[in-house]
Amino acid sequence: MSTPPTPTDPIRAATSPARKAAAVGPLSRLLFGDVPERRGPLTLTLLSVLVYALFALVVNWQARMGLMDARDAATWSAIGLSGILGFYALIRTGLSRRLGSDPSMTFPQITFSSLATVYGYAIDPPMRGAVIAIMVLNLMWGMFVLRDRQTLGLCAFGLALLAATMGWKIATRPDLFPPRIEMLNFAFAAIVLVAAAVVSMRMGTLRMRLAQRKGELQQALATIRELAQVDELTRLSNRRHVIEALAAEQVRCLRSGRPLSVVLIDLDHFKAINDQHGHAVGDAVLCAFADALRGGLRESDAAGRWGGEEFLLLLPDTSAAAAAVLVDRLRDAVARMSFDHVLPGLRISFSAGVTECAPDEHSHVAIERADQAMYLAKEAGRARTTVHGRDALSA
Ligand SMILES: Nc1nc2c(ncn2[C@@H]2O[C@H](COP(=O)(O)OP(=O)(O)OP(=O)(O)O)[C@@H](O)[C@H]2O)c(=O)[nH]1
Image 1 (spheres, rainbow, N blue to C red):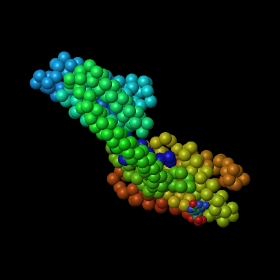
Image 2: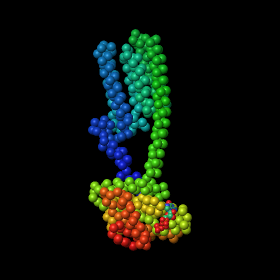
Image 3: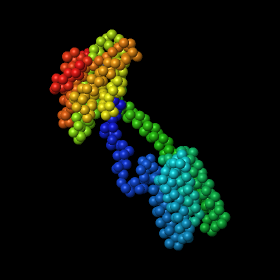
Image 4: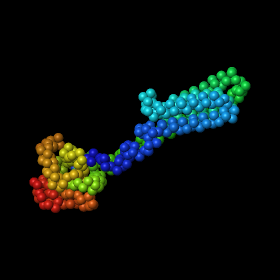
């Protein structure tokens, strides 16, 4: 906990990738796989699959009504569905990531859809007006992903493709594609496609602003979280976070039945350092001592700044007696530590109060006991550890 947040951080635990993965059902896992970043692109592509399937139904229904060649309807349905399912497979398997910079393959998907749509225009004379609406839908599909240049490119590509198809059909089937009607159709298509491109680009600008805001908010949240948990001077956990960590450890110890010790440490004669050498030197000593705590504790232990020159240690799976031994070892290490980089010749010591924290007592009660024990150590001459309730002093 000396470098918070801890693994016990409830917010982190609730939103961890493992937790999210566990919450996903078997059908969802089958459709979307285990990679969370693929979920968004796969959702949109599956929606495309659904739209193509519905179009295929309508087109084949139209053929059954005798309004369209049945073979053309079947061919269009097969090409459209197999194409879009191919994109789904590329994204689902992760191959799309290897093929290009955009793993959602939005640009190629819309290019494919434009081709399929204009092919539909060529084979479905009675409903070709509806095909223009589908071209607009194609363009709108990219509004969440595409850059302006790509949107404009797809708009121009769609119109060019449509113009070429119209020219071909006017030349080969003027009975079904009269030139004047085609000209009007093209004018409508140009108006709605350009308008759709403009709307799509506007959405793109909003999307970028939103992404920027999101980044700023995440940054602000990280700062707030840090301010709420970290002591600015020593970078150890602050008082609030150390209390939260103690409560979390108590829950764990209640489950495991293992002991939990709390240690309150107070540097000896710290005021003299401040008075003789200045506040800046005092600050540097506090930071150096915090470093010593970070280096001297086990991974599972935690250290926080309780306030001023006081520090609180949480030692899970440790009895009070074992904690006293650990603290004395820490004191020896600190006594041997050189603070020459702060103040040549400086040596520091500390007094400590140790108590075992019962799982069902309020954390403040245990800390109060550790505080009383620490004052006993001070009264007994400093540079020592007192274990609460045992009158055991170790000098
Ligand atoms: N440099 C610095 N000093 C601090 C900080 N917080 C508290 N102090 C100082 O720590 C000193 C604590 O002094 P006391 O409570 O008298 O304790 P002490 O001098 O260590 O004496 P004993 O605890 O009895 O050994 C005061 O001078 C506070 O101003 C801080 O963040 N930086």
